[in-house]
Amino acid sequence: MNPKEFHDQLKTGAFVLVDHPDKSNIMTIGWGGLVRMWNRDIVMVPVRTNRYTHELLDGVDEFIVAVPPEGEMLEELSFCGSRSGRDTDKLDRFHRTEQGGLTGCKNYRARIVMRQDMVDTNLKPDLLERHYPEKNMHTLYYCEIEHIDD
Image (cartoon, rainbow, N blue to C red; front, side):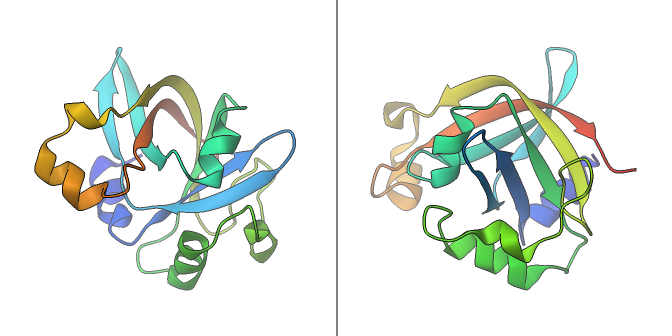
């Protein structure tokens, strides 16, 4: 995963796909990052604790990050970012690859190596007021990544 391309794409969004034993879901992400930790390339994906995807992530060890080509799939990104998987089967709009990713995207398997809950008292007050007025914090998922496209 190219860090600059990934960060640039997050401005318009990428997808997170979770295949839980009971349900699969897809959501749009606009925040995240690539870091080098533990002598590994790590993707960090924040998911708010009130999101349905967060609930599903509690029951799995990995998920897929699907990065669409720049400027493409904007309607799908908007759709997945504005509806909950609790109420809508968002995946019925997509075609999945044999490896579980999304057709038309660069797909990466993200194996969770650490989950870290954000604590509001550790965040600068201006960021807390601006981004968390309802105190719906994120869990940060740190994951090893593997490109899974053919």
